[in-house]
Length: 528
Image 1 (cartoon, one colour):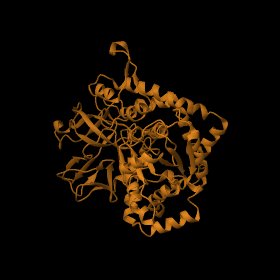
Image 2: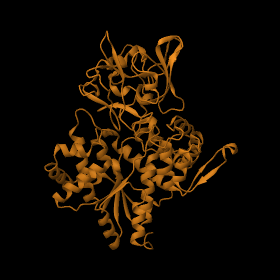
Image 3: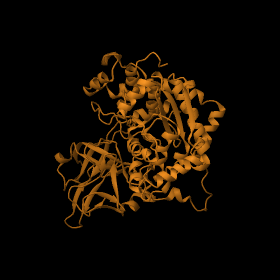
Image 4: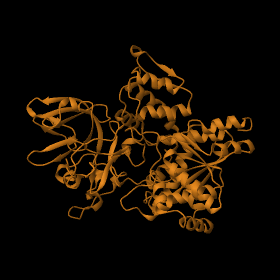
């Protein structure tokens, strides 16, 4: 496949669309002598989603360049990452990953006979590998291990030892798979640099590292298997795809943190040489783009409407997903899917009078749907001089109406255009006749001469970005908080502003992917 290409042509294919390459000179040197051996690994945790088409398209590039490609189903890593895959489901999830990844590759025309598939437990339980784990553990500090896994391993307040082992095991995989290079997302960069630092200490060669950009999810944040609203599952029905794309953040003219636009760039243009926008003749008719830059330019100039972009992405995406859906219609694969990912909602609850499942009643911050919002407009409440009625963009098709009591503290002109923090899953309630669809979170001080300030997201945030409490990033928010359960009220008691003006819950920071949530001056204030 790659014999007719020159080393420079192979280098171009291998590195195109990557965000970063560590070891470029070594890569060029290997290509002058022989074909590159490269591996891509995936931990078998949550269901793979459409962003997996990004590494799949690069694997196609590697094969075109004549590389020897190994795909690793990292089953042991999945368990070590805070038990994201329970031990009893590990074998089933690994089988599911193998079937769905092969279906993805077939849907984009990648020949499976050119690939080598391997499971981590095929060699990671061997005597030699285990001894190397102990050798590596005697060299790597706790600080380095935690830092290396910070963007990959689930971060919690009291980390398990297994999560600290994870980065070192991934480094050892490079040696035991006998490859020249490891390919992964740029979120794995710290693991790659740990491998470069410590493998030579064990007498093993430093490898090349090839890094893809991270594709934003539909909410503008990282597309995550554990965040349902941020991703489209490979087996989602057509109506589910339509529904999720309809709700996706896609502000007219805004090319920043736009998950739909990023999908066009990193997936559709990686797989095809063109992208077609379908639209009514009165809006200019259909148009075929041959470069992503043209699409971005026209969207920024508002020559492409978000609705037309979403409809066109929906059509292209369904063409990719149809063969995968068809394959998984077989009874065997339906059974495998249901067994590997049992639907917890179908489990019957306890009989009346029996104690409830403690997990359902657990009061944790991840149950709160807190998001970044942008104030679009502010008006005085028609029936209450003490209230504002604000229209706030939270990354949905329609802005939310929010009623707040900031009239006495912040002039309307200072609020308009400002980024704020909203609690979005409280039950909507009418305030003097106007329905408030979210709560604006503010810091406050004092009872008499009360002071109030809206909380501030980090600079560069976009509407719709999720705000989480550190250590509780992976949990899924309730669809709607039940008023009688008083979940927010119970959590709010421990929400404070620190002495350096950082919003916290029980000492853990409130943050987005870009950094911490703060207020301007109210040190030690409460949050509500």
